Length: 93
Ligand SMILES: [Zn+2]
Ligand SMILES: [Zn+2]
Image (tube, rainbow, N blue to C red; front, side, top):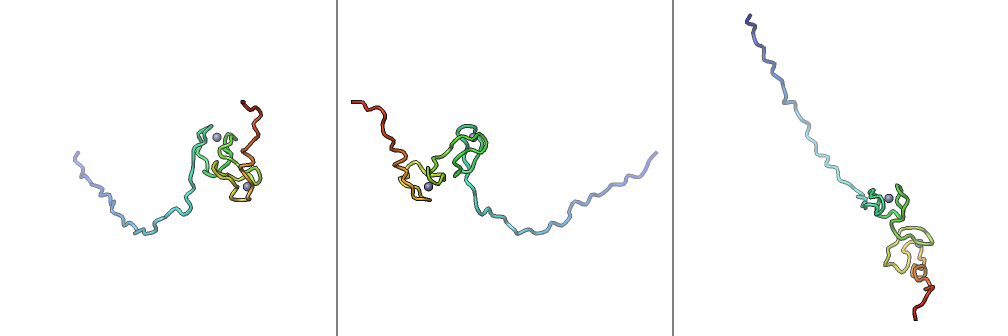
C-alpha cells in the first residue's frame, strides 16, 4: 500500500501586532527581608505582618517608622532622643 503523503504545512507565521506600550513601574516599593522570619516586607514597615516582630524603630507618639539617627520624629515632631535617653539604673563609679 502506497498512499500519498500529505504534508501538512503548519502555518506558523501569523502576524504579530506591534506593541509599543512599554510598562514602567511607577511607585517602586522597596522591600527588605524581615530579620526574624526573612519574609520580604515593605521597607517602611515598622512591624513584620507575618511574624509580628518589630523591624524598625517606631515613633512613640505617632508610631510611624523613624530612623535610628533621628533626634526628632519627622512626622509628628516627637522628641526621639528623650525616648532613647533612658536614665541608667546602675552607674558604675
Ligand atoms: Zn517577620
Ligand atoms: Zn511621630
